[in-house]
Image (cartoon, rainbow, N blue to C red; front, side, top):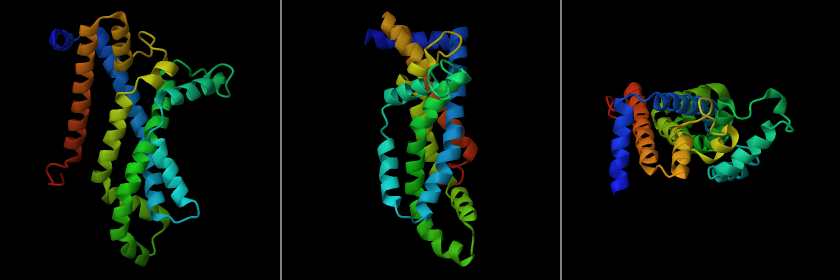
Length: 234
């Protein structure tokens, strides 16, 4: 219990004094996770919607595979990305290993199946309501996908926030491909792992509380900007 109180005090001290290291790794955490979220959403939202409206031979197998990928072990993703980006790997010439870009790539691979699966579940129900109307209007596939995404945007927000929550809390994969390099690739989760390994549990807990507060702030900000509460769609 004393460690928890010490962690809360450490979090307040870091925030009130605007600790330079805390600000740096917090901004880096946000940059990496939000970049991964934008890229993953750009891939997952159209794909999940397309999967909901399109019928093809291996659709069930594709959906089952997508759902299975929701549980991808982050360390395995990190290992695969590491091998691809390492000097002897096919993309080693790009020099991306141990950079924020490598961390973004790993996070995109981890959260894309999660957002796509939630999108598919949401769009499947919406497509049942819109099917006759969009078919009768003779809309193209792109128009149907765009219409469903726009009209279901608030429901899709849940999927995006779930992806952000997993990305911001990820540590295994980004530790492997990022390396936890000070002033370069250190983010909140890897800093917590580092301080825990050093035995500084108070500071580790303080960073953990800062991470939770940041995740809550981002969620509230997105909900406020999307005006979900004002329009009574909770």
